[in-house]
Length: 154
Image 1 (cartoon, helix red, strand yellow):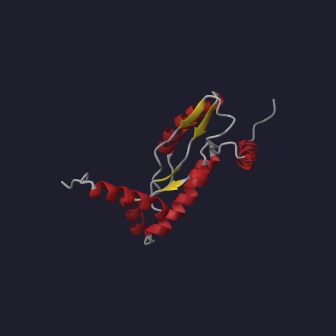
Image 2 (cartoon, one colour):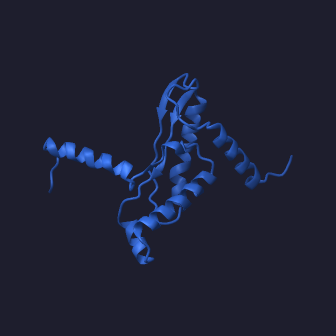
Image 3 (cartoon, helix red, strand yellow):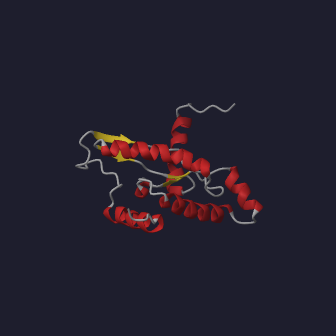
C-alpha cells in the first residue's frame, strides 16, 4: 500500500471538486432523483480563530449531507458567517483594529480553514450577516412586522 500524503491528495481532489462544481446546488439537477434536500448548520462566528468546537459542529452535518447526496438528493448545503455582535467588535477594539477590518480578515481566514477540510458546502451561496446585501432584508422583514404591529418591546 502506498503512503498517504494528505497535503497532496486532499488539495488535489479539492481543486478537482471546485473545478467540476460538484457541490453546487441546482434545483433542476439530474442528480435529484429523490428530490431536493436543504441542510444548514449554524454559521460560524468570526470573532477569532476556528477551534475544535467548530469541527464538532461542522463534521456531522457534512457527513449527513454527503449521505443524502449519495442517496440521490440534490443537496443545498450553504455556509456563511454570523458576523454581527459584540464578540467580534470587542476583539477588534482590544486589538485596536476597525471591526469591519477584523471581521473581514477573520472571515477570509476561517473560510480557507473550513475549505481545507473538504466540506461539501456550496460556497457560491455564502451568507455574511454583516453585509448590506444580507441585512437589508432582515431590516425590511422587521419593518413588515412593525407595520403589522407584530413587534413588541419589553
